[in-house]
Image (cartoon, rainbow, N blue to C red):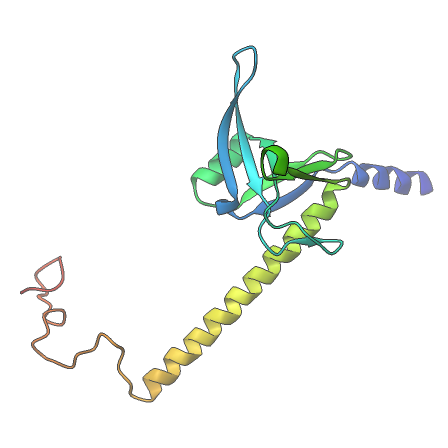
Length: 171
């Protein structure tokens, strides 16, 4: 039984780390090797506000060989799930030339946890903002207030809809 547990721990340690990056932070490009072969790659930027051990990783990026699944996710506008090989550090960079700064994250799982925590916090803040906006618009509606586009004029062309017309307003 103890042997089985140690094998599972060993397998768990060898699992590939996986995290979803927002689509707008993934930038595909092609890399041409010296022998002429062309590879699909992606620059993946770390979203602002991602912190690891108190260090803000926002603005750093890493280069990644693109898999067909990742290319499809990027093209369809979905978050892109990036895998990291177990045991290999993730090398981040920022800037070019003499201003280039690098960071190395020895455990890819740490980066995944930091990005996931940031994604969860961002989603939570968006939900709270949407709820507050819905409450505010509901309060405006209950107070009988009109929106800024409601002219109250019955001759307003945007309110004169012709049911036989598929295009909406008739003038």
